[in-house]
Amino acid sequence: MQLSSLLQRFSEPETLKMAKLGRELRAKGIDVIDLSLGEPDFDTPQHIKDAAVKAIHDNWSHYTPVPGFLDLREAVCTKLKRDNDLDYKPENIIVSTGAKQSLANAILALVDENDEVLIPTPYWVTYSELVKIARGRVVEIKTKATDGFKITPGQLEAAITPHTNVFLFSSPCNPSGAFYSKAELEGLVNVFRKYPNITIISDEIYEYINFVGKHESIAQFDDIKERVVIVNGLSKGFAMTGWRLGYIAANTEIAKACEKLQGQFTSGTCSIAQKAGVAALTTDLRPSIEMTEEFTRRRKRVLELIKDVPGLVCTEPDGAFYIFPDISYYFGKSDGQTVIHTSGDFCMYLLNNANVSSVMGEAFGDPACVRFSFANSMTNIERAWARIKEALAKLK
Image (cartoon, rainbow, N blue to C red; front, side):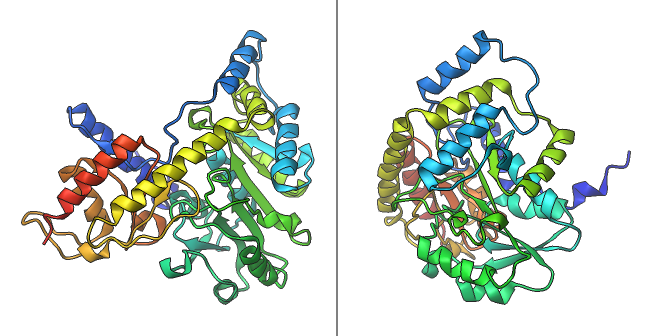
């Protein structure tokens, strides 16, 4: 059997790989604490679940329109106006089976063979692989912890070539938690104004999990709004990961292109999830606010705990629910059996010796770092970091 060469162009997500390894250890009876997956550890709010149950009883059980039910696309427009002061119409919105599909649609619609896609590092693991699937070329723009893991206008302009087609970034960022202020976004926009052929894909999935104030979307700048594709969804802010509900907001040409692609892949997403999504976007936001308040408490505690671990250098995340410390202090160290050469070695050492799962920085474009989630209970977070400290003390 000969499989498609497409499979050789991209890698399995390291986030899913580490979660799989953790499950295998649990199946053997080992108590593994999961700090690897990017999933809120909260249940979907009751009023959203009630809307889904009502949809079932009301027999919303048939195929759905490819771009999504009209009432959900209207709800997305309402949300964008309410939260971001952005004006969109339903024809600008395409609802997909998760924000990952929304990203895939946008990249496949925009990227041709050898087109360059600029991506600031660190970035979510799937960005680069989707570009490779589209036969585009990933151009990484390296950021530093000292700059808050954010690029400068000068770095952006230096990376642009005649082949640059797309700029892809997230704010708040997974894995670093970096958050771009309005002034910082405007600095980037001043560069984009010089290059009208570049489309900006703005991943705003962590919008509500924001520790510094009002979310800022790059689509707020009217003169480039038509070149912005907002990607968002309900998984993080509404604890709806399993519902698989994402969306884009874009100009009608891009929206129609994404609809065409989606029509051949999945068609319209789950009818019940869509009806639940209407309730999520248009009714009580208090559960989302309370969830972020709890993440704020956990962030504070994790930053306290990590200070007690020698050698880890960590910036304070402004959003999302991860810390992304530099662990390169441990490169070359050993417990007598295992030598740490890479962040991957570091993660496997913690998995096998502390029974704590994390994700290697190589997956995010920064091989000196490791991502730890704090989307877990405070008890588990404290247990995990006690284990990490103990295990790392054995490395000399």
